[in-house]
Image (cartoon, rainbow, N blue to C red; front, side, top):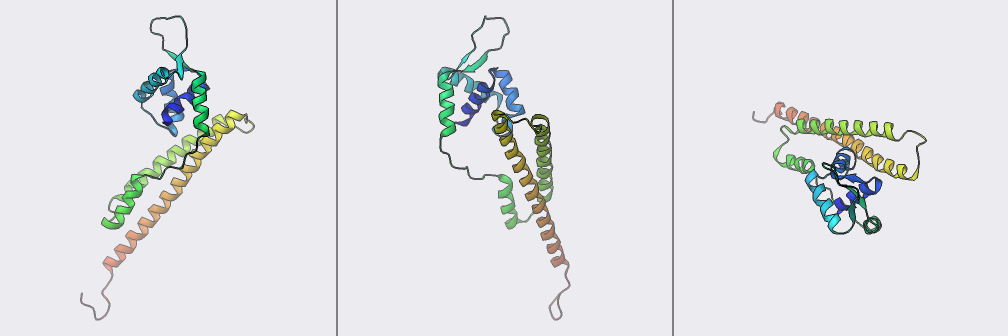
Length: 194
């Protein structure tokens, strides 16, 4: 149920057309709640049918994009959702499962994938840091910006954590491969058959 709430949040921040919303998802909200353009347009239609948003009234012009705004019922829905109790979701990451499988079948080729993930997280951290420097300079601290910054800092912390973990995982994997190579190349002990 979070996509409708993400859309309501975005529209309360600034009334927007569907196209503008998809661009905003691509640049900010999508960092922590992704949605395809089709999902956003479908959800806009449902929210409008449900009486939570409406197209901003204006004179019809050819080629004009419909701009949406949140109605009082939509604001009430969003406020209720913010106050709801929700437990953390369990981690479900294929890379972690692949490491577990590698313990059973071997880790051949896994380091390349760990390195690729490390580079992706490093790029995402650099993007987040650039956003922080641009949008949250020291002294810019009104209430809305403090909460936006808090969300961004969560992203920065998660990326830094992934980078640290992936660096450790690669070191562990390299150590395990080195130990395995040493065992494979070890001379047999005296009295043992070769």
